[in-house]
Image (tube, rainbow, N blue to C red; front, side, top):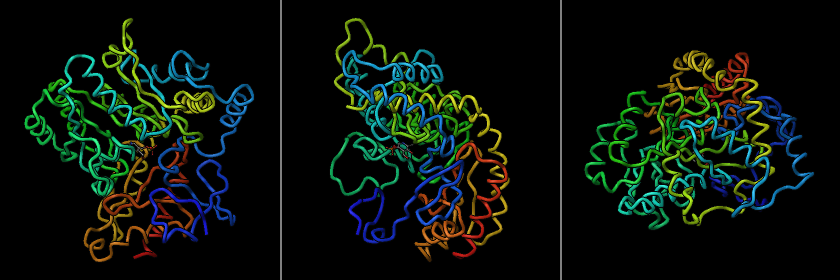
Length: 415
Ligand code: PLP
């Protein structure tokens, strides 16, 4: 029996039934028994450049041969760390931004939450402590992310965590305005918002909602935190969804696609106004950071990954393929089990199952997930009873057909 306690797993069911992935190439991965799967989810939305790219291994090897890393507290840095911060700042939705590194999306969200409150403390508005989050939101599983989870099961059972959090419907600007009015605009610190809700079921919203919510938060004098852990680095059809929709966020959280998951990295992009109090000549030390903030080898992997994304124009590719993906998925609506396809922003989509079917058989999404896997395609059951589609951005149109055919066969077999 295994000693590995899996994340997001019911170990009683998983122990003894694990799937060991041993290698990957392009959009395919293989298990320890030699079975090949088309990876329809890019791992957990991260393998933007596909598997097995030697450029990353070479960059990692070269950096490790010099020094794996040193720490970056105080005045220490590394060449790849400084370069990657520069590079991300040059792609950021707001010019002249600053980049703070961590190790993944959850600590990026923690950093963003602490930064927002600390920013208002620095500028003399310490009463701004309230965070607004949207239903269905997923912001990772550290303290802040758990506290602003729009999926309530992810929040329950831990007792009090971060206080002063308020949930709102995910797609209503009027409800957001009403919440701001009720809280009192002067008390709002920030809105946490995924430009496209991902793990909560892939829920694109009209651009008008994004623009309106941005306006409401600006007028409240609060900060707009765009959680781009999924949507960053090409997935939403631009370097960031915030660029595509001109959101001008005060803070962006990123992870996943920044290294395409080859090594763990995440962080926060702070716009110049948020960074200013911390970068002034007489600024106090911000007592925040992690042992692996700016890890040299991880940043070298990030630079090599961004080279590939840029050279292969993967954000444009995701934009071009977004209508192809929607069209390729439409025929699945012929299946009795499927009631909705949600897509339209980059290479991310959800196949929604019939609510009545899910009420009759609460395990249906899990069954369909297993069945699609048996048909050679890796998918994932997501919140609300659907399946996640988020392939590597290097996927070809023929491979997209194969991905959808595997879903069709798997869902039919499960029905
Ligand atoms: N924020 C969003 C929008 C995410 O989708 C995720 C993970 O899927 C996170 C934060 C947390 O990232 P991580 O799992 O790297 O901690």
